[in-house]
Amino acid sequence: MRAAIDIGSNTVHLLMGEVVDGKVTVALQVVRTTRLGEGCKDQVLLDVSMERTVNALADFQEILLDHGVMEPPKIVATSAIREAKNAGILLERILAKTGWQVKTISGEEEAMLSFAGATSLLPDRGESVMVVDIGGGSTEFICRGGEGHIFAESVPLGIVRATQEQLDKLEMIARITPIREKILGEVGGLPTKIIAVGGTATDVSAALLGIRQYSREKVHGFLLTEKALKSLKEELAPLTGGERWERYPILGERSEIIIGGLDILLQILSAFQCEAFTVSDAGILDGLLLEA
Figure 1: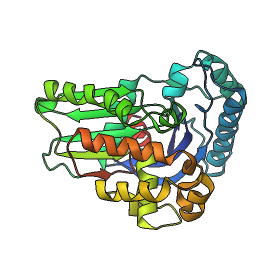
Figure 2 (figure 1 turned 45 degrees about the horizontal axis):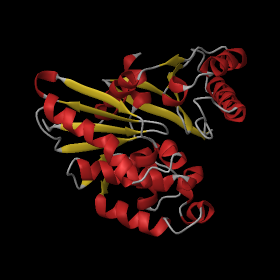
Figure 3 (figure 1 turned 60 degrees about the vertical axis):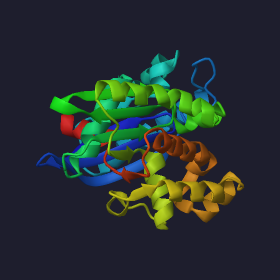
């Protein structure tokens, strides 16, 4: 049994499982909302956010020990730590508290891991597929073209960033459009299928499914339509974060920032002229275990 951890701008995510026939069989998933990127000004992480993140990792260490996992997990840090001027302080605190080394990966590495994980559980029907991984601080776009060519790029557009910077529709489009044009140029056409991974897509899908306890099996493969996203945004936009949480408990602390995530999803569909995402619960952590 192996484990992998992703330290994101909004959440810290633990996945424990085994790789069998090129797929990850999941034994345990745990998510902690630590809001590492919250209130980050001038690319400096707040002390309280770093403390929440270190404590979450210490909790994960206890969980792994309780499950008999002695091998250190593979841990990656994404946009919040990638961009932070004081990231070294956080990494030193994590090492001191847990003895764990954290690898800060590039946007392209993040994209490739997400693509490997997301496509591992979905059948390959020869479609032109793009994987979109919406995180807290960035969104990764990964598309496979002819002759195995992989386009992978990270954009500074995530659910936390969109909320903190109060990004409107035009600003989101301005960040997404260059990616569409690059894909047209490098891949030779727009994808016929978009796979969405990450907490925004999976939590929204769980809310639309009406489930109160998260289930990978129920969410994986869910068709997240533009119509459903617009309807959910219209329903949630007038409500406070607390009211959204009460109506859809599955959203948890993401309730405060979910409108930004819905806007990103909608603008991606619009830019790529698609009506729906296929949601995959497998992503960067599955990619890490497959790589290992």
